[in-house]
Length: 21
Image 1 (cartoon, rainbow, N blue to C red):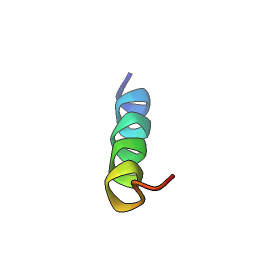
Image 2: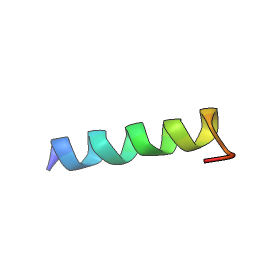
Image 3: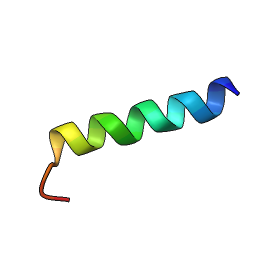
Image 4: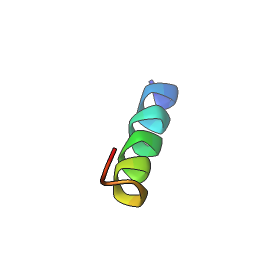
């Protein structure tokens, strides 16, 4: 669903911003 895609996108963005985490 679009929500799932949004969540995955947010998680990917967080990984990019916080690679240490």
